[in-house]
Image 1: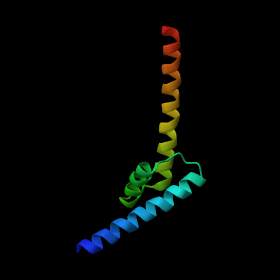
Image 2: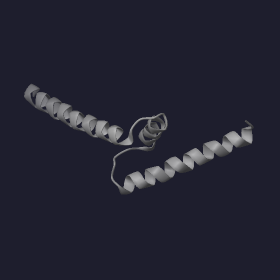
Image 3: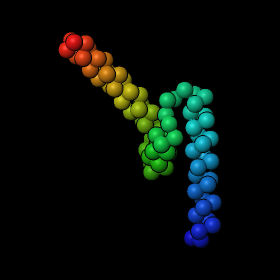
Length: 78
């Protein structure tokens, strides 16, 4: 593949991620461009989009619990 083709493919990928990020912002997903790129890669590799969305939601819930627990522990230490 020529360098020009590689550059065009890279530019197209950037534009796609930019468009996805704009849509992501409108939908308030909270995903940044890097996270969106990872999700796209996983879906292209065969991951089920609905399952991926469910995993992301679960990870966020667990993160909120951990942060709340950490804040409670920090408050007790004061």
